[in-house]
Length: 140
Length: 304
Image (cartoon, rainbow over all chains, first blue to last red; front, top):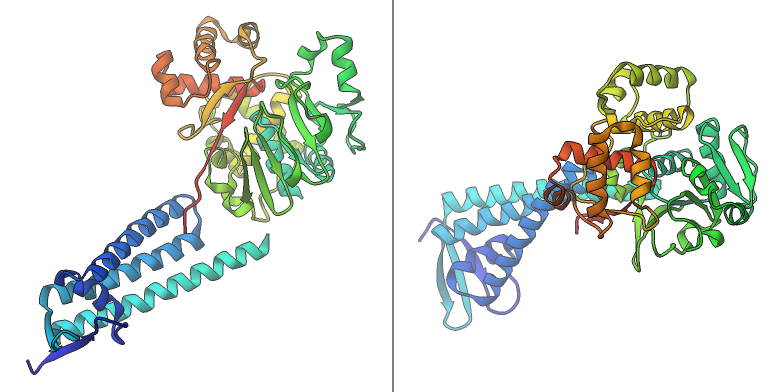
């Protein structure tokens, strides 16, 4: 396929490309480690959403921002992972050693950009949350 | 310091024993202009600024001399040193424990205590000890709402006494049959916890009960476990509800019967007594006025 976004996936070591794509995209290809990671990420997402809700109810803004940031990060991973799950194909490059996930360029790029935006936003929220929490602790 | 004094005042108004540094006791006396009748035990070496309602005495000797005096001490703030806060001290008293290091104080095993240190509060229950930074006090359910813990770190949290404000609050309390903390706070343009302190001061200065008419005095109650102190008996409940009519007395009696069996949630209390939430909260408020209640609070800060 000429128009593809290619993510190189190696059985040992981590890929240089988007971790979300790696983690969630491969969940559909029956790899035990990615499935475990995908479930863990989803659990973190649910926990963070619950924490963000509780912090918001208690008027705890720093903790709410921190947890929202984590939720946004997880959503980003879901987006890029879903694209690999829905449209990606696992192509063996070297038999028994390396694989590639290929995604059509249009969809792949859109999802990749969406993930990048969510990644930046999420981490910005996490950083602001941590800074506010630290400042509050220091003010005591 | 002022915020801690305000927080201690609020906790005491619910009959929750509090431990503070000597300076905070002075501050409480100053903030409330000495309105709260206080007995300073001989174990405490303190001079207070507003002394009109302060009695300096040896509490143990006083109670041993005449046990009947205990009933007259029920509405009085008792200030004792941490060493004197033992099981011998009648638990139904309104106790403020003084310690130079509140973080290290031991709790009387029968009554949970909230100790207010410089940087954090300590919740000392039976066998457990929770260290709670003030910024996390908002997760100590439900007492966090009662003391407005969200604002505890803000500079405007501390109560500032104003006689005009107290008179206005008294007028409102006398004019209206059904009151609420939120209405009072809106009418007087003060934070909700100030309104609670004003009600507390009115009750102390006028020697009357107001809070059973304040529908949200003890709201919310969803996460707290309630019980009565061991020294509270039937006659105590009958006496404190004597002036509030037969119906109220019957509610209080049925509630006492259930509470004396151990710690219960409001739902269990409603189910067992057949009372509605509104009626239940009224009686709980009344019992808190006379320090008859003991509580178990839930502290659940988010994991991240």
